[in-house]
Image (cartoon, rainbow, N blue to C red; front, top):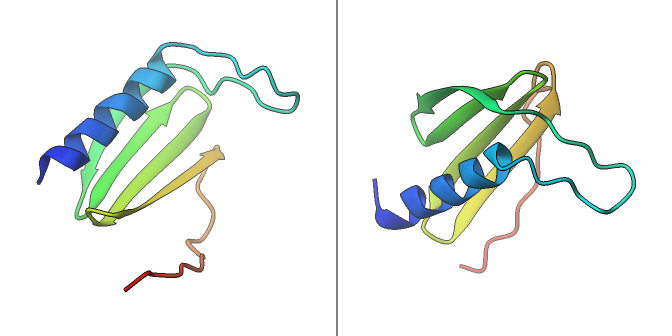
Length: 82
């Protein structure tokens, strides 16, 4: 995997593990990362209360899904510049 993948992954893990609280109402911490699982094109992070899936489509396109408990069925739209 390339350097961009690892840079984004490390920044995201650092954000989650730092315990930063959003100042915007309606946002809450999801807790510390308890496990990391490699996926074919990304990673799955699990915390005490949520799951975070980061998928890398190419070096310019990533998808981040966050859900408390179990991730719902994967459904999304994307527009590519290419």
